[in-house]
Image (cartoon, rainbow, N blue to C red; front, side, top):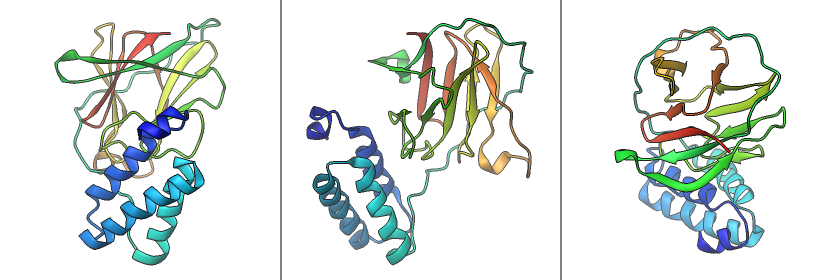
Amino acid sequence: MSILAEYGLDDRLYANALGRIRSSDDHSPREKSTLFLMLFVATGALADPAQGVATVERFCDNKTGGHFGTTETTVGRGFLRSLDQPRTVAPNLGLLRTHAGNSVDMQIHPLTRDPRGTVIGSLPKTSPSITDVGADASREHLRIWLEGGRWYAQGLGSTNGTVLESGAGDGDIVIEPPRDQREPGKIYPPVEIENSDRLHLGLYTTFLVIVD
């Protein structure tokens, strides 16, 4: 991981893949050892964590019948709020990973102003992305983008859902409920996010929204 980081590659993506293999219920200890070794060799040979992960996933699909699952947890309940009219100017925002006891990482993850937005997840296939997440974050968990002068977040069909804790004291807003609580066929609309809000992805990943 330190070598990947030294060369500007995504060491968190590699770590997330290791975590997925370790927590998988679909593979025996022997199969997990094979997958660990394959991930190490493929990532090193290709000098690309994303391609290394893709190689191991293809092997799982074709040979072992397993997959990289997401650890299921439960998040709190809240409510959906309606969207206001768009503004014309918006600040640059970033995400700061926070931990229990209100400790925070020093690294700020900037959010792109590109209309495609930023995907947050453990094994995203798009760029730009944020992979600094916990074990129960889905591979593509949440998308954040700028539109009409406002920042929005929308769930991507994650296993454990996302809750927004309002920095203005307006309570909790469910961006996307956990999979086992979602209404079949219901589409959960984007939710506006602002400076000082907190985003809870499952139980183990919390980001503070800040002006970057």
